[in-house]
Image (cartoon, rainbow, N blue to C red; front, side, top):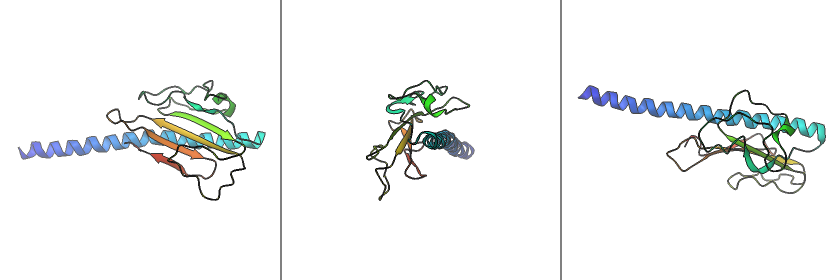
Length: 161
């Protein structure tokens, strides 16, 4: 009986650890894509003097809520332009949905839980990139990551539930 109890405890620990590692690898995908989007945005700004506004309306290539990976689609529109504007590529299908929007003047409007650093010059061009995915079907919380042109920080909410 003791052996069965020990095996049960070890199984729970193993399953919990496996879920944490799996979730962490999915969040790494979003971190890498946000970093790639930031590089593409900076390249766009060097060439054109402003950041690319794909739009904050639609997540691409999907909303990330269906728990399946989706092939990256440069023809997907965020509501203003398509992702082809940034020449961004993904070698593999992605779990998260992404959107990036930009402006030349005025404050950026990231999700309310993202803190824009104090003292930011709101008259300069800016961009915000938002990623979301439902990594835990048993929870109502969605994992979200946000990067901005204001600093190199990537904000996370509900990482891996």
